[in-house]
Length: 280
Ligand SMILES: [Zn+2]
Image (tube, rainbow, N blue to C red; front, side):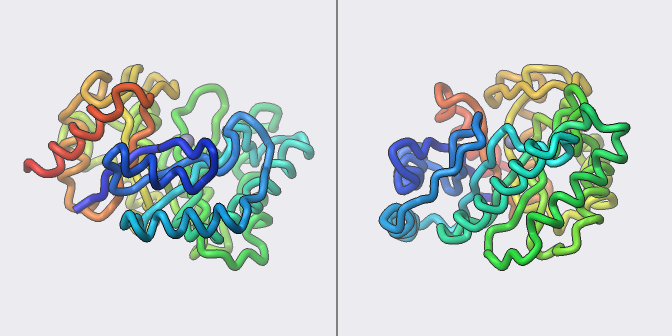
């Protein structure tokens, strides 16, 4: 049975994340290690690391994730951006390993300024290989599929698969599937046929064994609209059937579903997902 949870606040220190997760009835959770709209990196104190681990243990959390900064761009032709992104991801991985976190998801970046998309993908692969060079931590770097707005990289499952295939250190990478991003990039989860076809393509291009976690978000925009706009479960264009199709799919029976919807109304999202999961 899948664990269901949400992206929770870690304001005031990472040790608050498991406490907030419990308040929201999460079975799994993710949070920001650092402020998401910056390149800022603040090391976590030994006290906070110990308190985080203690809280997770006491509350029974064995699966936790962190989301990297939104400013990451591993394809940028600007060295300061690209190397800044690489450094931030590596530091994040090291820090997350100390916390015992399973994975850190990130957005690959944008091909804007690159000669073409294949060049951008090649640059991203080189960047990821550099990030993982000599990395021995336990937190996996998770490539998150993009919605396809602008020139984002890692949109189709084929693109994510190409990124993954180029990575040398395969044991330390995985994939995070955002349902809204995939819907916006044309994968239609609203019918069992669409769901089966999408997962078949995912398996062919990426490999289902590389799917680490699902970000469960409904969509404000239509299928194929290529915009990153999360909506509460039950209120979006995907609808409840999409989440039933996903939660009941045998291939996803052990993959955690993490909500990234607005805090207000998220309790209801959590209740929906748990209801769909529990009632086949
Ligand atoms: Zn994301």
